[in-house]
Structure formats: C-alpha cells, structure tokens
View (cartoon, rainbow, N blue to C red):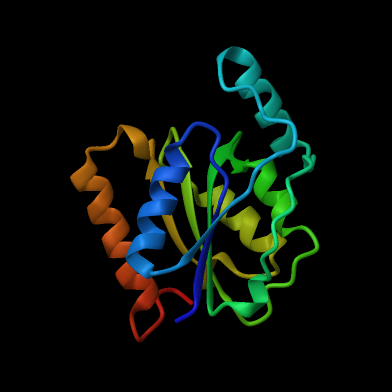
Length: 167
C-alpha cells in the first residue's frame, strides 16, 4: 500500500504521533508548515489558532509538493483547535484532489474527543466521517510511550487490515 502521513504540529504533540504512525505504516511523511508561525505560548497561542480555525481562515503554508490522489491511503494528522481542524491543515486540503485515496485522521486534542472535528474535516473532503478511520489522542506528548505506541499500533493495524478499517 502506498501511504502518506501529512501532519501539522504546533508544539510537537501531533508530530510525535505522525512520525510513529508513518514508521509503522512504511508511509511517506509530509509536514505542513506555515509561512508565518503561530505563537506557541500564552493566550496568543489559543487566540490566533482558535480564531483562524473557528472563522475558516487559511494561513499561507510553505510549498508542499504532494499529490494526495497518487496514494492509496492519506492520513491527516493534526491538532484540534476550538473544536475544529487546525487551520494549516485546512490550507493544505484546499484545492487538492484526493481522488480514490482512502483518508484517515489522527487528531490530537486536550479533551481527547475529536468527534466534531473529524465530522467537519470529513465534510470538507466530501466524505462521510462514518467511512473515515479516526484516531483521537489526548495530549500525545504527555501520554506514557507504551500507551501511545499501543494506540498507534492498533490504528495502523486497522488501516492495513483487509477490511480496510472504517473505509
């Protein structure tokens, strides 16, 4: 299976999960980076990221040569901001064609409940969340390594199973 993991990470939580999953899947790993970085501390971090996600603002991202439609599986790994997908991931998906690629999400959040975020993101891709495999992680960088590894392993098995997970 030709797979890619595309991720955005502000502070490393999502990066940790994305790298781990890409390794287990033997997938190519792509990082989405903003041209102007978001603040990483204090109230400004929550204000700017949450505002952009809530109001659908699309920050400019650095060029990323990656055609999702050329993969069998594309996993989008992202933090959830104000109940929605982090704005840089929305910038990445805007105008890109995913074709017949299966799509899955790894969503990191403080709450561990990414239901609304997954539904919103699936809708932006023209897909049903019921047909999209989703791994919701609560603060991956704070999780015990064994627990995170176990969840990533189980998700990788779901994605590569003959039934194709929730696809």
